[in-house]
Image (cartoon, rainbow, N blue to C red; front, side):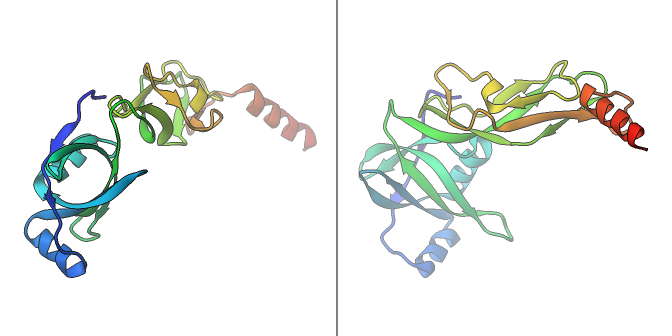
Length: 202
């Protein structure tokens, strides 16, 4: 989480179309559009190496301070298009935002710690949607799994969020599911009852 925007140099785009985009990319630039509610879209070029480093090191949702028309504009990296062969970024969309504004974003969820004996974790959702101040968006949300037993679950509403961050997703969204490891003799009450019912019917 950062409370400071990353500076991003930019130059206005003066020509458009596929040919212009190819020329920009050959010159080491990435065509970018900055848009948002009540904001007149701006078409700019940014340095490929600088922008790629920001995306790789900080990911989507990163807030940047872009030089536009001689002034600074806060914007959030919303989407990037990559070349299917080279994986280089060909184009990017930035959402114009304002200091103090809250936005809804998807944030990666990662696990920490070890589950209980015989339990294996299945991550059912890689991200959850949250609402946060534009300069307080978490890079990721860590969820401790220590001691979790077979049959337990963690839903989005169970996850502790950083101060100032609220859940925008369905609280019942299943994020982590804990099942028996392959070959484990550990049984939950439900699986034991199912086994007994099967034996009785034979």
